[in-house]
Length: 318
Ligand SMILES: Nc1ncnc2c1ncn2[C@@H]1O[C@H](COP(=O)(O)OP(=O)(O)O)[C@@H](O)[C@H]1O
Ligand SMILES: [Mg+2]
Image (cartoon, rainbow, N blue to C red; front, side, top):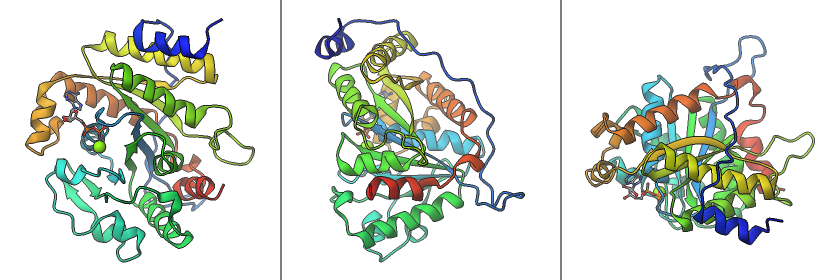
């Protein structure tokens, strides 16, 4: 019988063709004011971009996904929620007027600090040094939740660039989002850390396991970044999904791959999203496909009962 340690060794070392077939697409309807029939507010879709290991490309993916979703006509807000090493403002060459720290302390709201980024989306700059959001006071948490609620009634997509790992703040932002995009590279350390994150969110005893009457845990997608080609992306996805299926009785959906491309690093150095600076590269085409896939498969906004506020409160006051 396959034990977990063996399976993990196989996951980081040997190919496994067991991939989960993608789910059938559901039609997208945009958040745009209240529902004409029920008058319920239409809520934005929210996607947490996260990873087990740092430096795998979360912020690069977040910024360029924002650019591509904006190109599809969506009103996109990117919340920099990496409380340890926030840097979306640096990547987009922006000068923040305030950060998430001012919002949490009640001095400013998201509207006061949101900035227009190149590519036609809005950025809410993050703050370093807020490492333990779960330890914030009830009042501070309420402020954040209220700001998130206002945000999700005023745009179509909220992207949340989280920190790496399985700390309380990362898990809180993942729990708040409707969908989770777990980024990994083919490196063995990134793969095992991605599995650790998936296990924390989806394993037995996780507080985000479904409970009757409460929203489901986030729909989880796995993106393989910095790979040689599509075949390597499929192979790495297959290994991780196979181990998840075996031990967690769950498999993340495949979000595809992004190839390793030196022009991505070049664009980061020139503080421009690479899909704007080098739109014809293979990596930019991968991002374009990712945005299309996530947009096409988004849930109907009328089915987003409760939204971020409900999910965040459920997690924080569980
Ligand atoms: N597809 C890619 N090809 C080449 N370099 C990449 C790619 N994706 C990310 N990088 C590089 O990896 C580094 C870390 O990316 P970053 O987005 O800051 O990671 P994270 O937010 O996960 O810490 C950056 O220097 C970035 O340019
Ligand atoms: Mg980052």
